[in-house]
Amino acid sequence: MKKILILLVLLILSCTFMVSANFELTGKLKTGKDEYISNESGFEGELVDFYNYEDLWFKLKNNLDYPDYYYFKLNYYQKHYDQKSTYDNQTIDFSGNYTNNFRKKYRNKFKLIIKDKNYLNDLDKSYTSYSLNYQFRHKLNTINQYILDFKTQQFYYTLDENNDYKVDTYKIDWQRDINKNIRINFSYKIKKKEYFFQNSTSDNKYGQSFSIDFKYDL
Image 1: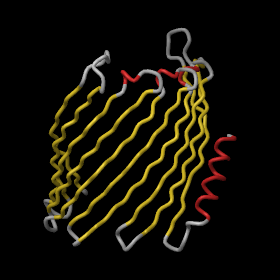
Image 2 (image 1 turned 180 degrees about the horizontal axis):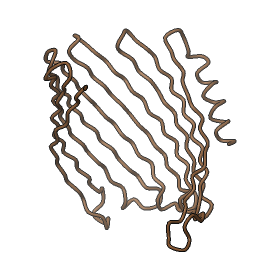
Image 3 (image 1 turned 30 degrees about the vertical axis):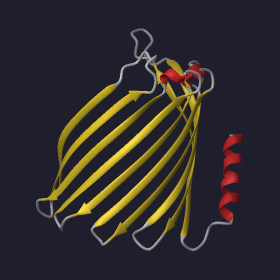
Image 4 (image 1 turned 45 degrees about the horizontal axis):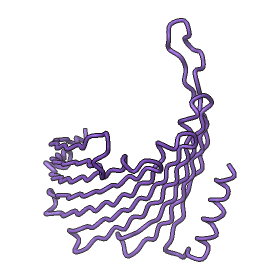
C-alpha cells in the first residue's frame, strides 16, 4: 500500500503544473482477494490458496482539436499469494497514445507501452517489455473502411538473455456495412515470434489467420 501512496503523490505533483482546461485526469484504485477452492474428491470446498492484489492507474488525456487527442497512462499492480509465493509479482505499466484524424477519411494512431514485471521470489520470470503499435484507418465511403495494423513487441528477461524475444504482428481489416443493422468484418493476420539468440531452447513461431465476423443489431 505504501508504494501505491507514493505513486499517487508523485503523479499528482507531476500533473499539477500540466493540467489545463484541455486536460482530463482519471484514475482508479482497486484492492481485492481471490481464493482457490478445491474441487478434488474428498476436499470439495476447502481453501487451497489465495492471493491479495492492488491495482492502481492514472490517465492524463489532452483533447486536441476534435477528434484528435493524446494520453499518458500509468498503472501499478501487485499480487501476493499465501502459498505459491513464486507467483508474487509487481508490475509497472506506462503507455502513451496519440490519435490524429485528417481529411475526415483518414486516421493515424500510435501507441507505446513500457512494462516492467518483477516476480519477487522467482527472478527467472521477471522481464521488461517494449511495445509499439501503429494503426491506419481509411474510410472509403459511408459503408466501407479498412484498417492496417502493425505491432512490434520486445521482451528482455532479467537473468537470462537467451529467453529474450520479439513478436511482430501485421493485420488488415475490411469492414462493410451491409445495411444500418448489419456489419461484416474480414480480417487477415500474420504473427511472428522470434528469439534473439540461437542458444535459446525455445522455438521460433510463425502463424497466419483469416477470420470473418459480423455484428447484427436485432
